[in-house]
Image (cartoon, rainbow, N blue to C red; front, side, top):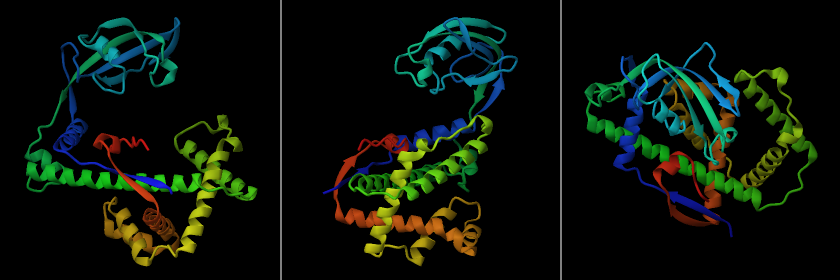
Length: 315
């Protein structure tokens, strides 16, 4: 009775071009210039912001660098910066929309004081033979570069679509079953989630003295994880779906592609049985998904390429 949506998309020439544009931006350098700033330039500024006449943010004696036209900022800010030269100071107000993200600025009137220190113009690389060689095309053939990027995008799309199917299957399993979970099992999962979160915060440089994690923060996630683990174990056992040696090695081969020396990576995984646990578990999960898909209803649905890449599925 359960249904999984199988999304389908195509990689178009415009998607390849957008990817090349991203690669160009990543390789763009900037040169100091004596003229007014325009979109695309990088400007070095000192900045203060005010909300309700109270200082909300300041760079102090430091400066920040911003590229004008960057879509991560509200465009009204960059519009105020266009036309300014080094040495110019400017004050202006911006009214943020009600749906602005982050919400701290939503529907707020923010005042800015900006001092421009330097203006830098972009030096973009040409998409030519040299560019192609830098991206691994030995003979510098631009056509081969486009074909290579197209193939990479197809692989990435397939990986993301398969990940979405797996996500749907696991959610359907959890939502369609009721299980009385042992409290001890939930508590073990909560401790593991808390430990993982603490390690992540510590590695991100958080001040651990200010961190206090309550078990209740992880309760719901712990219940879902325990429930899913029990269901998967039952399905694997009932239908003999544990991964074969060949499937485990296939998963290791997938992992190894991301390493500089794939052969060495494969050897590393196989040197210690403990290192085989993750690829074996993932290959087993693939078997469960395949079994589930053979039992459930499916519906094919077209989706935009950009939505796949940004993981905006609408099931």
